Length: 513
Image (cartoon, rainbow, N blue to C red; front, side, top):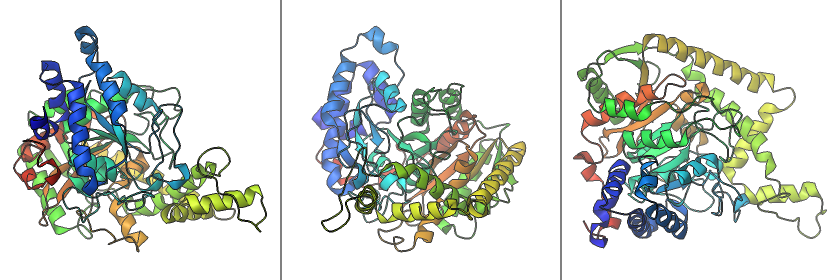
């Protein structure tokens, strides 16, 4: 099997699953192949905080030992390994949210999505890096390491889920889970040339997802193809009584929609071009690839109409009031009392609970987390609540209304995912506002609870990936899967296409072709 490692890991998750069903490969061999790539790639990519190789091999062996009848009853992706963003709790595997304040914490329970993956027979390769508590757009704010973009290891992979996106792009994992609060799955997807999906808010259980901003957070798939994401979302989606925001209805028919879209027939579909998401501030190469992709949608029979969402311009401001306010509330639990890091005051300082909390939080939280806690605490403080938080929630309502009106004119909305391609390390670290601008096109879907997806739309003039974003109505996730799969097929530069041959993978050299 060793001489086939590079060929094996370059298959899509769907193709890997088909190879298992045919008996060409076992789940154990698939896990072994990806562990070899992880070992070779990690010195330069640094996507993983924790590799759970022994656990993954045990899970693979348990799947391989099942009878043919039992295997047939499992979902299509059964036996295919997956990586998990370290914002999602995993029983028996250290979970840190990339923060020193949770260093060494081993959860005694699994998140609902992890339970579903285990029930589906999908081995867990490990936990991927992120900006601390998912707060950032470049994965430079991790307390442990900086993840590198496989397209150019001098550049960021996006954030906060840069670890999951880089792991999938570097062939360390065929699939991963991320969390998306303001674009943390889709923006890294755009910067690494992967498919990133934010399901409808409440469509996938948040039980066991470490809370950042509870009204915005959503777990979703990271993959190399649209069909892979559809198959994964159908596994992890569905109602969960342990999550009070969980939607009672089950997953939508996303796999069927993706397979229908692959036929490249979009006759009768109306695609809405969001007027406010483009032009100034968007890199010329990003605009060019976006416009070319829109032309492809037209060629396949889609009717393209321009729609206006006039309040979208205020979404960044509203988000950076609502999100830090919820961060301030959610991160209050990390106080050194119950679990995680505890730093006692030094000798000579009063040994009080308040001082212990202060020293613990000072040592345990990084600069970006502290910045957002302070901002959120201020926005929620007496005398400012109505002026800041209350006003931001009103703007959020206006954005939701904008989307409702836009969906009266179009079935699905489109926009670039990120205003630029991957930027170099350190380029925006000293300018938080410039960093926040990376999420300008992704945040509106989170504020409105809409499902959204980023797919690769080729390479910009600088040779780096560009993301194309679809946004669908609430609880209609399947609506975006059809045109996304159609565009992926029409561009002919998916992971088997000519453009992606530009991705150099020296870590695969020597592992076989």
